Image (cartoon, rainbow, N blue to C red; front, side):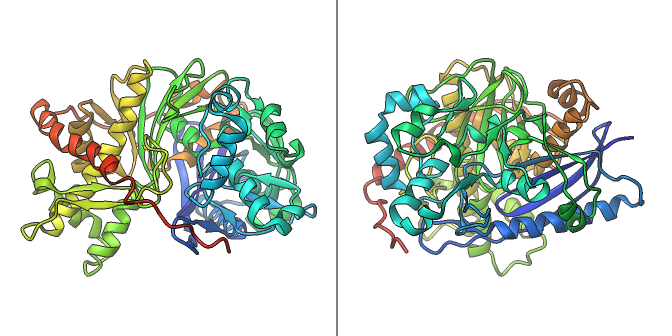
Amino acid sequence: MGCFLGLDIGTSSVKACLVDERGRVVASESVRLGMKTPHPGWAEQDPEDWWRASAKAIRAVVRKKGGKKRTVDAVGLTGQMHTSVFLDRHNDVIRPALLWCDGRTTSQCQSIVEQVGLENLRSWVSNPALEGFTLPKILWLRDVEPQAFRRLSKVLLPKDYIRFRLTGDMATEPSDAAGTLLFDVAARRWSDEMFQALSLAPGLVPEVGESAGVLGRINAAAAKAIGIEAGIPVVGGGADNACGAISVGAVSPGSVVASWGTSGTVLAPSSTPIIDPQLRAHTFCHAVPDTWYVMGVMLSAGSAFAWHSDQLARELPENGRALRLNREAAGIAPGADGVTFLPYLQGERTPHRDADARAVFAGLSLAHTRAHMTRAVLEGICFGLRDCLSIIEELGLAVPQVLLTGGGARVPFLRKLQSDVFGKKVVPVENSEGPAFGAALLAAVGAKAFPNVKVAAGKTLRHGSAEAPDRRVHREFDEPYARFRRLYPALRDALKQPPAATK
């Protein structure tokens, strides 16, 4: 029976999982990653750390599977979107990678809008100029570190850098390329117009193949480092959100998935590229042929709860801390007795498009406790996801129910909270491997174990028990949600950040 490796280059960890032809996870392993924040709003990682973590995770799952015969039949890659890896002509990394959540490029985004115009951004690349995207990072390098820019030969995304380390080949595919702001999302090709408008060489980016197509094979050096045979095919793979959607069966219009990872997303596939006229939500290519998706993104979801846990509950044992906090929050009434939390610890995308946005607790009094603050943090995350859902419905996409994955799917209290805040039935998907599982399914399709991605997703999908909203509680959230919505506009000017040092 075939076995397929999915590798996810995440923000907080690298995850590897082996999946068989029936969609069963044979083995999995995660290796944690660190993140450097040299200035407020900045976020960097060393690509070499991704490679070391990838090799360690792959070796671990190979050991867990056991046996000396061929362990893996194909490899699929996924990872964080937008993050920039800058390589010189010798293919050496020039500087630490600027992450998707890095907010240093506000002036470059303003310059893009001035030079290109919002209407051309909609027409050429289907998305606004946001700090997290790849193009502003390239322009930042040109503006702020010109010596490094003069060395620049190629820009890769995280999973594609790992592909290069595995195979020696440079390539990408539409779902990840769509997040660069250099890709014509509707036509599924690089945008010549954007390169010309910004005076950038088209050769900075790699060729585009298909997500389930073979775009390289494990070379001898990588085989020795990771413990699997040389010659094994590596498929295009996909962006983490696209692969996460595949892992939960969100591959066709009519399905909607909400995910809690470091960030939070709400994703709805479509058969045509649907663009938000106000550019609050993103329009990207799916890792499924002739399919796109609309996605709302909040930059701090799981990371907001992790920050709260680390800072306000550090006296609790780490093992069981999250469970204790959730239990405390469950004892507080909806609305957290007037406490509101804006989860904008690293700026925000949907719906505000504001890198200067920052987190806020509002409404605190001497009567409030940590439990109220925890409840407010969790409600703030759910309110941010509800913002995303509302935009998706505004664009005419149906939301009959919401599939749940990530941290928000595992805890009964959080499932119920989301259902009541959204006013929608929520359905957890029994898949703890996330995007790595979707990448493994793409590898299986590339190896002809399944005829296409939709069949692969359908045959391996496992749902948990649905949770229906309590209509009375949903109505109780109307006022707290309205308060949440009023708070950011009232504080926007006060939250403006002073310029960070450029070095």
